[in-house]
Image (cartoon, rainbow, N blue to C red; front, top):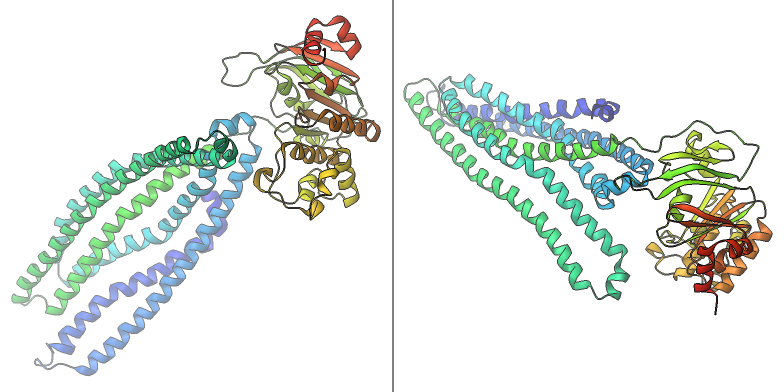
Length: 574
């Protein structure tokens, strides 16, 4: 944590210094009140005659000290919050930056809901921990230590009460905190699960409604929420037992101080004012110890959250950035050399096996195969969404693992079947491909993607706002916006991963014709389930069981590939 706190060392020091000022004023008040009682009211040193002028002077002094203590308390809070909020801001940005650098497999391992919890709630818990350490802990320690010193300065006999009460309080705190501490990590895990259910239901609300599963999802949410509430109640119940026990100890201690004080007043060792001051000091001491309860709750939750944040920050991205960032003589060439791939956690089961394939610059290359045969996995290796388990993937004759990730991914534009559309305007969604593109280029890309035909019917055209997740657009409209985004990037290699599945054949044909005439030099890799989507490609690879079963033109495959002919017959033959 010091790595993030040291930037704000001044705030980190000023907060406890001002807290020292506030606590000092609190510790002075009982002694001044004792003076008012002994001299201003009882007049112990003046033959039993009170001194109203002393009462007024001392009272005004007390008011001044209270105001100064109030100022110190406000400033301590200001600097503590400046430190904790800036600290939280820095660590939140670092965690988000690390999340963005994680590979797909690492993101899946954490889960979306858990990552959301860690970036929001867990970091808030750490901020509370920092505030508590530089403000609450300092106040508690100063009141405790200062109260004991001030109390003993009145008379040593008052220390007996403290010595008897302290072991009882310490045992109580250790017992309850020890029982509650393991529950805080469980509490955050329950919150993860609740966030996962919530995130799935918000993003999948149309599916839930279509299958009339509202009642089922309410039960699922209720179960997750019930587990969270149950865990929270266990923690709260523990501390609800602790509070009355501590109050009993506090009240018994006050009675004991009064009793000891009465004995010492009778003996002439202390004054009634001293007894009043001692009662206030014992209350301050024991209240400070009782605050340890809240401090330990915050510290325990903060440490549990800190471990969860540490897991993210310590998770080194499995896709390591290379150093190659130079221009290449060849542009748009993709080559797979004896590539095999297995997803982590699948026990070594191969999704791709000994793939050898070369896609030439400027070529339109189709990839066809049954669902789950490895088509998407194959193209995901090109921009290094995953790394090949064995073999090499080369782009422009350079191993993709040698590239700086930004250089490599600048060469590739990807449009997926499940189009990710952001809750902003259509213009900004397309301009993700090139944020600096002029409107003419945006409209050109939209025209090639056959998106202008619906964009121009919108009231605000390109400036039409899109609902979250693109729910205000149809499936085909979302795909065309995503295609326009990829085209606008004007990368060397354009990958369509079943991106035209929601388009009718006529619109799809227009799209490929526009791509062929307007972007002839761009290498186009088209994954499809439909032969109609790839039959006009320069070459087509048929994947079967993670291997290249056949590769050639449509005519060559019709003549030589039984798998291709079977697919053709099932889709197009009448």
